[in-house]
Length: 51
Length: 280
Picture 1: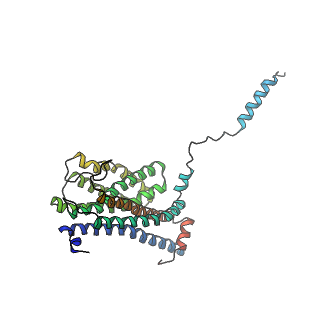
Picture 2: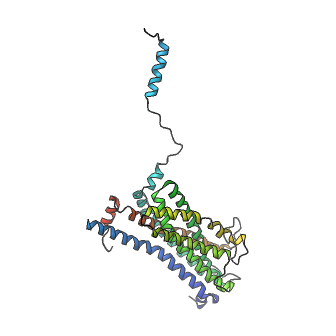
Picture 3: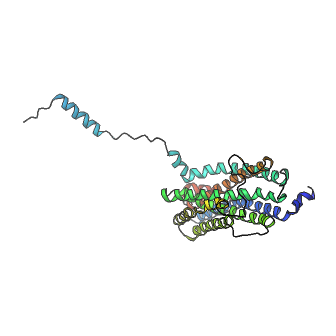
């Protein structure tokens, strides 16, 4: 990749900042429900074991 | 004394008695709604979401990669905004989702309030964090676009302010949901807020038309003549479709979580929990 590409005609901070924020939100939407599901199922399995 | 009854009168009488003793014939409805009720049953929807979610994430992810590659590498720089215009490929899908998800949430609110459908309550609660995240993204990327173009990160302009109100509405739904012990009471309160807050959706959308705004007008939602050339437009359309699929995946997964929590004492959830290995 050329330096021009990373420089984004002088707007690098804004362009790359936006894409980084986007990446964070898209990944959060993938990972957060997954972690929650694991925690929920573990809690249910634990409650079953206690009975 | 005997009453004289003619044979014809007796026949009519008998027919009448036979007809009365028959159960009423069921009325045929013009359309069968059984599929809808079946779909709304928690285990059926859970199974359907389990099958659909990976496809949404797969196709959505592929489209997003294509869109970002097209937007960052293939699309030419804008003649006025230069490379700063590329922020559109994150900003517009996020802003479109922020409104669409709110509309979906309000529709779920209506269904949850009128028909007391448990699934609609779960979807409503599932949409709120996804919608809030995309609204926050639309605001942040808008600020990052505003600084080089307008010279300020933030102005109290109709579009920006109404989008901020949208974020507060989403946060309000999330807060209300966690404020009640009983999930059904919480969902009813959330449904009311979602419906009342719906008035903000047309305000956000038409704010650039109704008021003098710094924010530019619509780029693509113009029937017939979009204000963007084809080599800049296709990554945007791919990004929009990819983002809708990606958020559908998140909403499906979150709805599943909500169903697991609410139905934790039922057999089907216990079976799923028992089949899950600890730490898996």
